[in-house]
Length: 142
Length: 142
Length: 142
Length: 142
Image 1 (cartoon, each protein chain N blue to C red):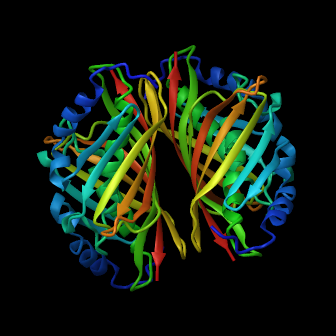
Image 2 (cartoon, helix red, strand yellow):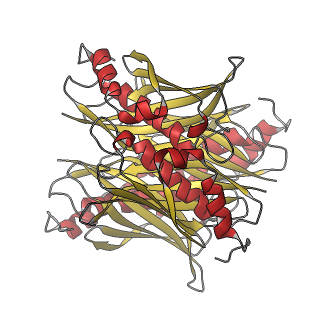
Image 3 (cartoon, rainbow over the protein chains, first blue to last red):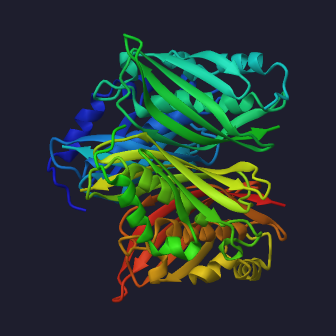
């Protein structure tokens, strides 16, 4: 996979910074490579559901955003990316000190890009557990 | 569909109130019937992505929560509900004054319940548009 | 929803007839309207899995085909339709004398169309049960 | 992952042999290990759709079956496995001399097991291309 946009990393960073929801939940971009993006989210009590675990929708926010930007790294400069669909399997309770969504492109395309994201919970002792996996379709708008 | 838990509506309401994430985003429970739950979310700029639309993950928060509680209305008293998986198709930009996720059970079961949620954007002039649809599997923990 | 292709019904019928797999399993097109397509499949023992139910993949053949043609009824003449993705929830054992997949377009679009299909099992006494539901994304190639 | 059923490989083979649909399409079991199953399907013209590619539903038959048996290798002796749901992303036209579905368990569980399958098309010159990927939930019935 070769990037069409030489400034893809800076473009992902500035687009991420322009997303108010990322600021609300406290997510940050931790890695941007060709076809791969990671987003980190420290635990916060106000992001949880009734059992104290990260809400599945919050897990989805970071997974979907990582998928979108992973696809975006392969798109031409000036593109806009939007999520067409995604499916999430929730594998374990999302309990941890920190959460990491790591997305990688499975298949790029002119219009559609298919991406997978794994979301890990990281415990205080640094143990990482896979808590969710997403497969999604992202669309390029030129 | 007949409820096994006579106090299901009050139980949904108190469980919803115990979810910190609902308070963070400003969602509220607007309808609880046997097999059907609606959640409303007023637009707020801090819930949006880089184009000013509601982030797909926020759409997912209200859709998933509505699905979980719709399933919960059919579960025995004292159950806990968790999301096994969901898939979301994003149909239009989530732009509006208010968003409503309406979930209805497609197939109940002792262990697994399949639920669908439609998410509508409501414009200032009250026009409603379907912006996303979710199908999910919810699990009953006794 | 208004068809762009005045001969959509004949075009669906001839495309269906050109699918060897439909002949192999014995499926037939039972309804073609704007945005809605139904496919019927009589039970046959050689279509079943180890418990004697219709294999989930065979359920998928008729659901996916119905979704593709439902989308196709809204596409311009001369288009080709392909499945981008689909998700199937299997609700009950697919046991019956006959199976019917009924697909309806949820949201049409220039490039992508989102479609839902319900698959019913019909018993000897004509009782119909919903055995599976699919949501899929179909793409128009011009 | 440790198998609970010491005869899992023989049990998968005999269950596979008892599926009439596998015989109809000409699929065969090519690998059974703990948590991993592969199914091969030689190309046949009567398995194709109108463009001459393997029908997406046939791709699904082998992917779903591989997922089910991959989950089954981890279940106790005498269990029955059924598919709860699956989602398939179709990445490229399914064109080739042979198709291979390779499934691996992502997360085992007492009741539910989440499995991923990749389906490859193998060309005459042995080149392998990923044509579809499935993520599914399988249920153990004791």
